[in-house]
Image 1 (cartoon, rainbow, N blue to C red):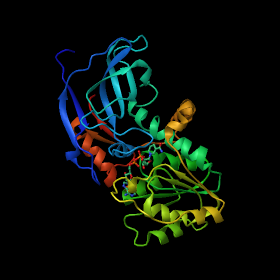
Image 2: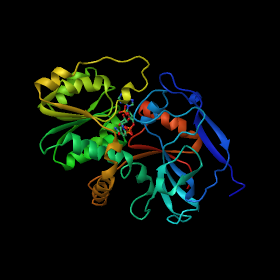
Image 3: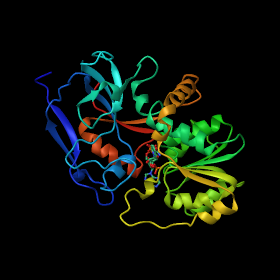
Image 4: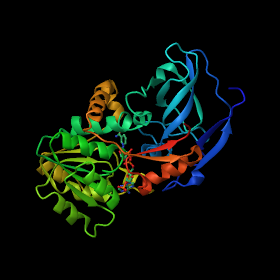
Length: 337
Ligand code: NDP
């Protein structure tokens, strides 16, 4: 291993507004050496996720900001190349919160094995990983969909959204999907079986398009995006509706605070619930979520889509693509075979 070099991507500056490639630096780094109880992992796939944008601000949140000039951490699937922990052997495929780098060292307790015989290893970063759990617990625990109800999903063609749509269909709901391209909406309709779609980018009157897609009102709104789209859905809620605040991607790059609809009157007169959550709230139940998602996947009741960019150096570009809607399904970067 001694003659190998590591490479890492760090945050060179904090983005103002929409991030640019200049905010990132790609540089050679020292090869990390595992100590007792640690494992050296070669990155195969990296995950780029919208929540990382929040960590690029120097602001208090549920997770600390990324430090400048330090490797950006995120979900990785990799191969063990050297192990100084009994539970792992070279060749094992593992996943964990590692980093945008070619090689990482991790404590054995911080990573888990991925069984390549069960599903393609990339699913550990998607349907059988963080996005899958987000969709599963957000929709079922907070949204509590009941057969026959109307479930609206924004950001519907992304990693989380595609799964929320399908779980809502499994529960017997009428699903209305909102996404930013006709190609995505065709996929949602033809492959995932949603009942109605709205293209928020091409609708000349978004509120009217939402009203038309939800003639009976909205029972569950799974909100991945916030902003005007969510204002348009909120005014359509029915009595007893549940609004699940999963993400607010339309706001992540704003420099000024955005003020939209005042939602309280709509919650009040409809005895409705609005609740945010972070997937780690459900950490103690992750085996339940992965188990159910794995079963649906094996039964063919859930499908997943991936958008895979090739090459470590293209990681920042893949991340930026999340904000322009480049991805259908989970956005990943393939780093090595
Ligand atoms: P996605 O795979 O959905 O990728 C992001 C998508 O968001 C893009 O493809 C784009 O699709 C859409 N988008 C980007 N900008 C805007 C905008 N201004 N308005 C509307 N849509 C936009 O990401 P994930 O599935 O990983 O995450 C979805 C949401 O869930 C994010 O907000 C994320 O932060 C949140 N999240 C929350 C978690 C939690 O614990 N609460 C955990 C994981 C994710 P389009 O073409 O449709 O515009």
